[in-house]
Image 1 (cartoon, rainbow, N blue to C red):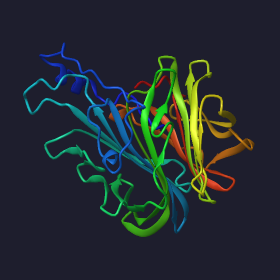
Image 2: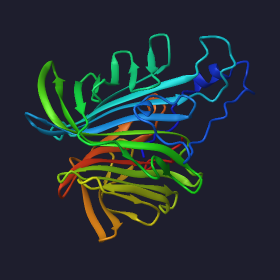
Image 3: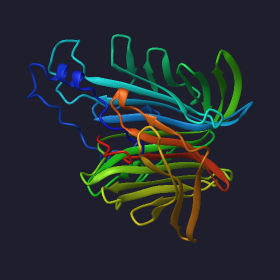
Length: 355
């Protein structure tokens, strides 16, 4: 479950609503009766409120392992397309890129935002091809993904090849997030990564492993929810583990879920009551004061018994402030477990997340 809040800036909403504020969009709901179809569903679904292409992973560099994130979001603005002007904004595209190097000690990141169209940004229908200026995530004809994005401190040029079939989360891709909330959701774990990382004018070839999440919805968060925890783990035996928890203001559980796919392709879908998160160590951000459970024990109920895993961060300060592009302050970082590694996302610890 990968979500960021409030992707539309107020001035864009004002422009969108000028002169036709009564013509608000009615967003469609995802349905368990609409099966996912690939490769079509690699592409954009512009009728829905929110959508993302979310890549996280580990890279091996000459100085040791680093974590990375390349993410594109599409948000449909809440006013009707009835405005005949081609200048009327209808879709907003946001992108984030981050590099987590323990030697640096904090996330290095960049972010961009643009209205779709006019050569500024695009989220293509039919297959993955999302862009903002020269930042891009595209799926090639052979099924591999290419990504280009960077900040003032680094640039990533990566090629990511699937080694396993897509993983349909929930009920064949219909993923419950609450009593009445759901998304369409699939993942591609164990992407084999090769490419180039450039820092301070020096380019080096890198290799690694990544995880892609694809998700879209018009109703993700229950009104009681203030945030969520999510982890995606690529295990050394070829298995892939997804876990998430939606939290209320008292720290209680609104919903939990996830999946365990074995290296042999066997699939266990996790629902409410099957997943628990317990903080083992917290870290306080010196910038925001938010307290994050950066070391967390996750317990999963399986037919063979309860499986316990402790998620440990590559380093503590992996906080990302996405407020410049309308999102929240959150923690998104590389973590390891016994027999695997992946990413942990912690949202809503510095205030309620809004979507």
